[in-house]
Amino acid sequence: MTLKQYQRIKLALTFVLAFVFSQAIVLKSFIPPIILLLASLLLLIMLRRRVTEIIADERDYLTGGKSALLAIQIYSWIAVIGMFILYAFRDRNPAYEPIAVTLAFSTCLLMLLYGVIFRYYNKISLTDKKLVYIVFVLILFLVLAIASIRLFSGEDDWICQNGEWVGRGRPDFPAPTVPCE
Amino acid sequence: MGWTRTPRLSRANRALRINTMTNKIKELRAKHNLTQEELANRVGVRRETIVFLEQGKYNPSLKLAYDIARALEVKIDDLFIFD
Image 1 (cartoon, rainbow over the protein chains, first blue to last red):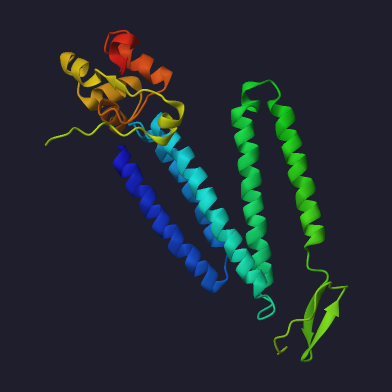
Image 2 (image 1 turned 60 degrees about the vertical axis):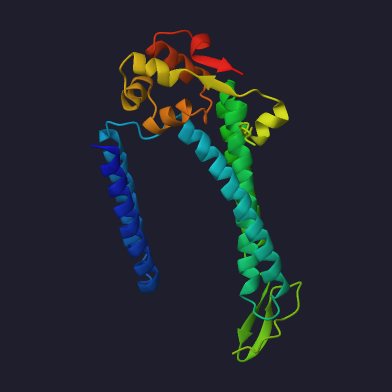
């Protein structure tokens, strides 16, 4: 198989996946796209082995590294600005706050992941402490995930009941100003 | 009045005051009757990488430099020249 054929199949699969995912969101059926995604990944791994040409070389990895770093920086800036704007207007629509928090968390997670992976390839992979580092990082992520779920699980919130905002738990912010319908 | 434009160094090169590097890949490749594709296959890179190397737009890793030198049957010193 040539590289061009492989790339065409990959592009076609991307279009099919995008279509299936969009339909899955509309129909609220999420099992078929996950199955299709896994099947596509397996198919691409199999096809990749059949390609006789060189798919990527050192220049691609160099370019990939630079592109990934720039993409992270651009995403982070957009997410941070978007987060502040949404958070500033959270009184107008309560839905803005979870979006702002999600943006902030995704940016932090992205930067944390980048830092961890960068450190691994820059230093740790060249030493004998690889396993210790991986275990430490896994434990750290597990602790952070549990703490995040506990702190931001939405237990303390305002809920709309019979046309009135009722405090659930002990929310430390005022009730939304928008009418409760 | 004519003037020649000096090659623009990248920001990293300017900061580190690294000299530009030229090479004789194209010349030696022709001597060995090799196409860019053939040389690329021999050293395990894509053809585009050879194109950019010949144009002096990409500095190879030490391994790639060594592989190209070996494929063209010369020493690295004879293949790459620092200006």
